Image (cartoon, rainbow, N blue to C red):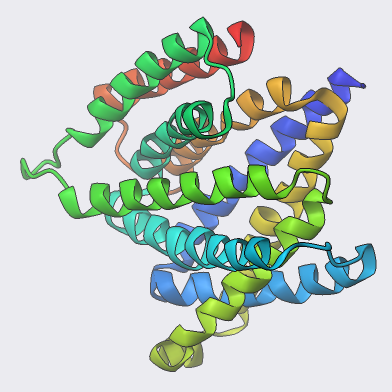
Length: 286
């Protein structure tokens, strides 16, 4: 394996995902989160479905097809929408830090459901990231209020993502990761069609700049990000690639402070440091 190239690709995936988050926040100044998610999924499906047909549709049993459909709808139609709602309410920097709890939740669930090992590094990283999440979740606005609604959206998204990732881990055994991912996005887009009637007014408001922004978000987040991450897995393995890509929330927080002028507070700085330490512990001692 070419580990050095794998690390570069993992960093590239983390960066484009972070940039997609910042662009999403910019896009939601004009349209609702659900509108952005529906359009993004439909555009992504237009790319992935032909790719799946080219690579070959996996030969899955009926029960696995059913799980694949549910995983796509929960992971992409609902979870991504909820995260965008949380980001809209809390800002990119805060929502991104809260999301770092998702891989910890996934790893612990994978241990009990799929028998994946728990290590000292994972436990230590979990503690550091949990403290970072608590610092972020309990941070109040200048008015003194805590955005519980935004926190609820982000945590619900994480629970749904955890389910989707565990299911995908089970499904991809012996199958093409690209094909499984493409089908999940396709079914997510199919589920998103149910929301089209409620977003027609929003769609009409989009101009060329708005469509271009959503196109960039789709290419960066759903296409390039997934490609870079998958190649990083092949080049460096999951033990190296996954912790490196988990730096994406840190990058997103920095980009949000610089370009979106989001508040840089002591709590956010401490949370970013703790998250970085947690990611390093998981990456180095797992």
